[in-house]
Length: 184
Image (tube, rainbow, N blue to C red; front, side, top):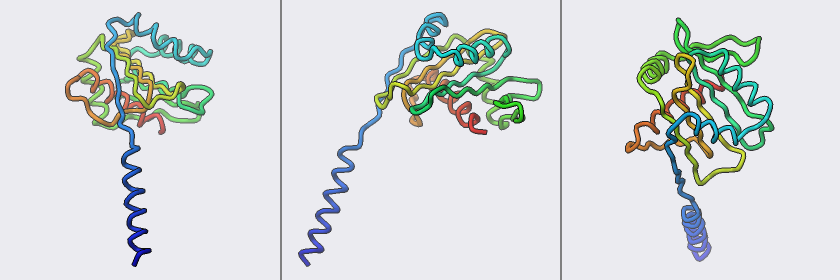
């Protein structure tokens, strides 16, 4: 009987200690007023030739579209995903010549078409307390050859909503769409 009570006590103590050490995630966000200020910020995060090359291709070849840059721990170089608006809708462009372009879902197409059409000059930097020095996500959104939306996240992608900031929620949703399509 003592063994059972001892076992229950140890299990209870173990469970309580695990919940006590659980850390709460907190993020700080800052709205950046201009594209030039935002560029100064994100260009400091990656100065590799590959990053500059991919950024150059996006700037030269995409009229209306999205660039997602993922740089995660353990990655020597970033991962790049480009989504482009075409006559048929929003396409995730192939990463390799052997791949095909992939049409985004109808819901994603509708969301992006509406939000890219109706928003501009939204630039945010968000930093979360779980950051590793080498973890960041960058989203650039272009419309008519101009970058109109930018979001730089230093930390993990947030699933929680921030109803007090509609602009930040818009950026998180765009990031979520681009991120989910980056694996196709």
